Length: 142
Image (cartoon, rainbow, N blue to C red; front, side, top):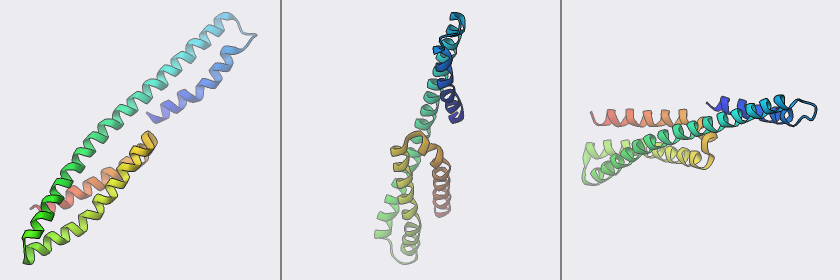
C-alpha cells in the first residue's frame, strides 16, 4: 500500500510537466491532465486505506493493551494481599511484565507521534511485544 502511494506521488511531477508543455496538442494535454487526476485519486485512496488499516490496528492493539493493564492491576493488588511463594511468584511476574508494558507504551506513543510511517516501522515490533506479553500472561494463569 505504501509503495503504491509513493509511485503515484512520483508520477505527479512528470504528469504536470507533460500537461503544461506548450507544444503538445490539446488532446494530449487533456490526456495528461486526466492521467494526473487519476494518479492523485489513486494516491488519496491509497493513503485513506492505509490510514483506515492503521486505525483498526491501533484500536485492536489498544484493546489488548488495556486488557494487559487490567491484569497487571489485578496482580499488583493480589500481590499485596498474598504472602510466601504466591507473593514471590506474582512479584516476579510483575517485575518481568512491567518493563514490557512500559516499552509497549513508548512504542505506541511513537506511532501516535509519527503517524503512518512510524506505524509501518513499529507495527511488527509492537505485535511481537503484545504476543510475548500474552504468552507470559497465559503461562502465568495456567
